[in-house]
Length: 100
Image 1 (cartoon, rainbow, N blue to C red):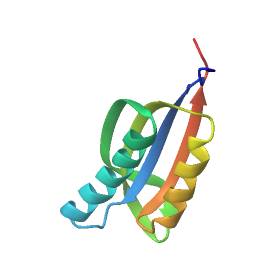
Image 2 (cartoon, rainbow, N blue to C red):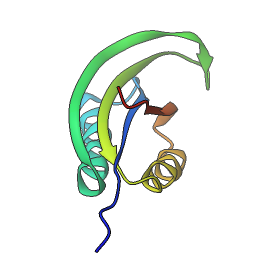
Image 3 (cartoon, rainbow, N blue to C red):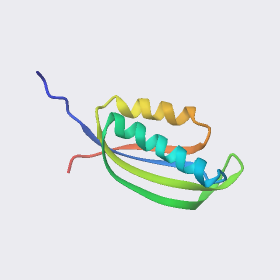
Image 4 (cartoon, helix red, strand yellow):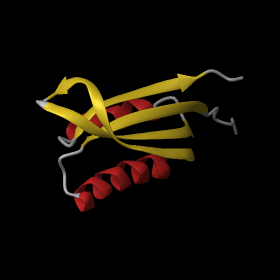
């Protein structure tokens, strides 16, 4: 049986900071659960509410969350699809980290 190779990734997602605190926490927890269900989660850093470099959808602030995880090569595409479906996510990035 072949062993699958897991790649190391990090993702940052920006949540609409105009949401109520409970709704903001629900969105954050939803995506952390998606990552946990499909990958080995590492460090999760909540950077909190920060000013955006430029307005996105007429909003000047967002709530930033950074997550490090190890997953199969096809998971980041699925995660990106789920990010795009949720209207409370302003921007995302998923980066594959090089093996050091």
